[in-house]
Every structure is written in structure tokens, then in C-alpha cells.
Image 1: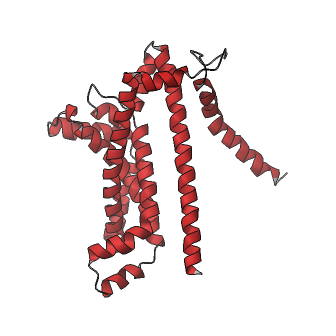
Image 2: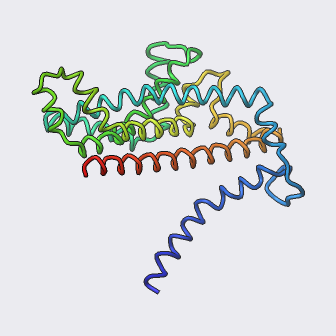
Image 3: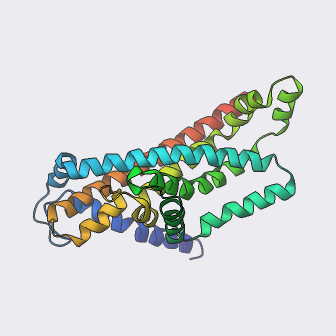
Length: 268
């Protein structure tokens, strides 16, 4: 019984997490207008998703925003993590503490404060997309920092010092020695930043232009409307996002295992 309990508990938790998603996946391949009886299976929702200009423009805009903000967040978060790692203990502790604030802070507070600072105080127009891009960068950068710091602690710091002693400039030692060792953390941070941008609602709702919608804001508005084909097409969109996330996780895990095997062979 003691051996079976952990397996049963884990199975129940997995079912609670994934069963609703699997139900959504099934309904995305039907012609049902609501969650209920299934009369027949169809690809109508996917056809609507890829042919309706309103949906395709919203998806591409969200993807471009996510990639752009994730790139900026990855650069800032990585540089911040490296700077904190090589700083004195007091400065490093202060930076780590300050990085925790945006992580635990409510998104609605972050979004409203960015709106007040950039749009009201500095009079930056929301139509320029600058507040939205800055907001998503601020949201994601602390999480990139948290992804990179463990890799910095795991690496052999003597290699950087050896490169400096052998005559390499700090910038060259950073590119050739430090960055390759922490690259898995950087990639994980970038992927997390993309996910956070795709998922965000509160910051986007405060800072986005009136004519622009991300997936999150569009979904909220669509659920209030009466267009059934739009609502059901969003089931297909959710399914595609879920499948893409699963594929990315599998590829990252396989790449990580492959890297560990190569390093093990090199050490041997």
C-alpha cells in the first residue's frame, strides 16, 4: 500500500492537470458549438483559425511581440545575472532581492505602474507599442535572471579566471568561456519569457494600443461576444499552443540529455 500510494497520488494529479486540456483537444476536432454532445468530427475550427484574417493577424502580432520582448528580456536578464554573480556579496544579495520583487508582485500592479509611468508621466503614446513591449520585457526579465543564475553557480569559475590570466580580454572570455557554459539557462529563460508574454493579460490590457490584441486579451473579449465560430476556433488555437509547448519541452530535454552525454564522453 505504501508503494502504491505515491503512484496513485501522482496519477490523480496528472489527470487533474491534463484531463481538461485533453477534453479541449477533442472538442477542437468537432463541429460542436459548445461543450456538450458531439455529433461529428470536423476540421472546421482549424480552417477558421487559419483563414479568418482577424485571427491570423492577432496570432502573428502576439508571436512577434513575444519573440521581441523575450529577446530583450533574455539580454537584460542574462547580463544582470552575470553582473550579480561576479559582484561583491553585498551587491549580489541586493540585486537578488530586487529581482524577487517583480516575480512575486501582482501583474496588475506591474501593468498599472508601467501605464502610469510611461503613458501618463512621460506622455508616450500607447499606439507606439513601446509601453506594451517594455511591460512584457519587465515581466519576463526577472525569470530569465532566475534561469541563468543556477547555471552560473554550476559552472567552473576558474575557467574564466584562467582565460583572463592567459591574456584574453574580459569581453572575449565572457563570449568564449562563460556564455557557452550557461547557454542552457539562457535558452530556458528565453523559452519561459516567450511563454509569459503569450500568457499575459493584465499588463497587455493596460499598455496595448486600442486596435491591437494579444491572444489573452482577444480570448477574454471573444468569450463576451456572440460569434460561435470565433469561440470554437480558439479551441483549436489552444490545442496548437499546447502541442507546440509539449514539442519544445521534449526537444529541450533531449538536447539537454545529449549535451550531458557528450560532456561525459569528453570527460572520460
